[in-house]
Amino acid sequence: MKRKIKIVIIGAGSTYTPELIEGLIRKRGDLDVSELALMDIDAEKLEIVGGMAKRMLAAAGIDWKVVFCDSYDCVAGADYVITQIRVGKLAARIRDEKIPLKYGMIGQETCGIGGFFKAMRTIPVLYRIADRMRELCPNAVMINFTNPSGIVAQALLRKPVRSVGLCNCPFAMEKSVKETLGLADAEIEYVGLNHLSWLTAIRSGGVDYLDRALGEGVNSAAMKNIPANGFDREILQSVHGIPSTYLEYYYFKADKLKKLTGEKASRGEVCLALEKELLEKYKNPALDVKPPELEQRGGAYYSTVAVELLEAIENDRKTRHVVNVKNDGAIPFMEKDDIVECAAIVGREEIAPLPIKDFRNEHIIGLMRQMKSYEKLAVEAAITGDRHTAIAALLLNPLCSDYRSVCDCYDEMREANREFLT
Image 1 (cartoon, one colour):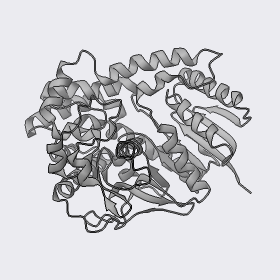
Image 2: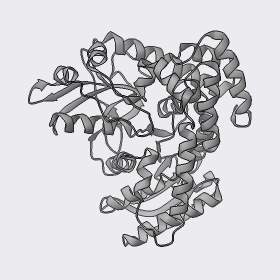
Image 3: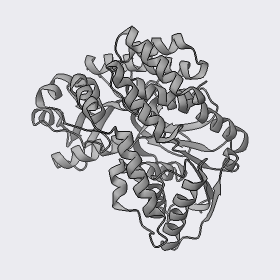
């Protein structure tokens, strides 16, 4: 008999929430939900999105208890806490994207100095959530979708709460490559950090199809929130892996900077317009299904990834999922306590990363190690607020410029984010 569970969604006023509700509806036969608590600090958005969630459940014939909350105390008695917060809302994201351009650096939500400041704002808040979980639901699992997911997961290692980081990018990457090659049952070797990852083997029937894929110029699916151009055969064969779309920012820095500088609106501004449109749709009392416009927001497979993971933990499935998890020796060239994004076997008691053997790709090894050093320093900067640690972190990030530009940009962005920082 399945146990009754309480699920909390923090940041439930997000327009992504109907994706999660759709996923929970799809899995209702495998999950016995006694309570769904929707929490957000924005009461107006919570009322709109929460109302949409209630209508979706009612239309599916589901009578779960649904409560709206404005305090982290809602985690009391929870079994799962899904976090999808945006500290500073989209206004902060827009600043992350626009200010760096003035200093000749890419402005992006999760990469470079923009992603750094998103982490600076986010980590202190997730620490407060983790502290409440420790007091009010010590056995619960935090499933974090908040970006930058990898840095956040690295930070959460310091808290005595069970947590796992998620992203929809790995699922989309693997699915699209399997479909392109016609290898539905292929075993994929996925190696990297969040938003810095590669597919490095595609095995089926005892054959590795990676070289064929690289020679044919096979790319993984582009995420809709990134202006992607794709990777040609030359770069695929040079790095000897199929990169995540996010690696376009690293491999084509000059082109990306030029494009971003010339855009009339940043991605955050586009998302702000999409959010307003979606919230207007959600207000419609007759709407009880996820609208197609949500996919333009970048939420493809969002519910699949989150709910499949939650269900695998709850029912001890011991199935494979790509997650952000403590390395524990799975990737031999990374430290034991490094958070890595890799395949893991997921069950009730543990999420165990799958070992990767005989890995000799020096390009990937070097870039992962460099970025992990950046991430660790970023976490320290978020906790301490120390300027020197922050500058040391940013000077390691390939998307940041020279010392003077980094310092000047850091000072302006810190001032712009002052109310959210340690």
